[in-house]
Amino acid sequence: MKCVICKHGDTNAGKATVTLERSGSTLVFKGVPAQVCENCGEEYVSEDTATLLLEAATSAARAGVQVEVRQYAAA
Image (cartoon, rainbow, N blue to C red; front, side):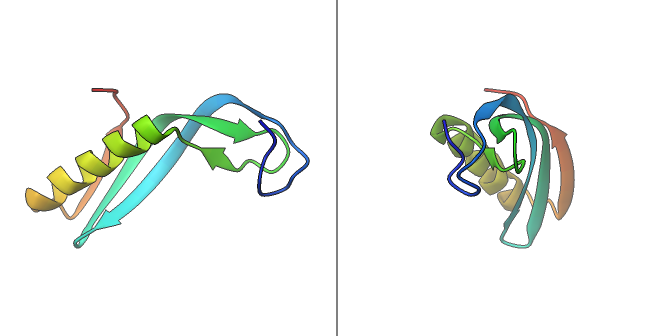
């Protein structure tokens, strides 16, 4: 797909690092599958992946996690 940010590059399969903050918790997910723009580096995650990340962030916030770094693993 064409990058919606720079409008010049095409995206290719790659990996991203995603940082989420929720209810005082900060979670960093490494190795998240994403489409990455070859021109500007903008990263796009799928709706399914975003849902998994948000569920994990909610669960961590409920458990009282303040800061955590995780390797992404699909459920």
